[in-house]
Length: 69
Image 1 (cartoon, helix red, strand yellow):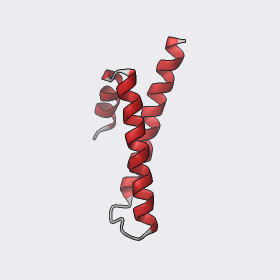
Image 2: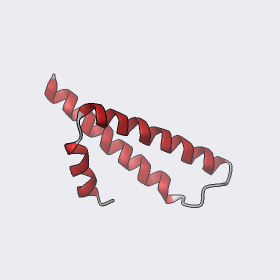
Image 3: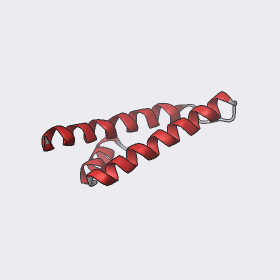
Image 4: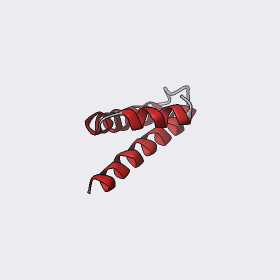
């Protein structure tokens, strides 16, 4: 997904949905790392993509927390 589209999607989510997205991406990253460690991961670039998506989601969540406070 393009970065701008992904950011627009994140901004449209409610806080609860955003937290769920962060949780899902964290789990996906963990699964990818396990698959990499066992040699079953074919798409190595997917780890970097998920890490960036997770960071963007966490940044959006953090910025909303600062605005609400």
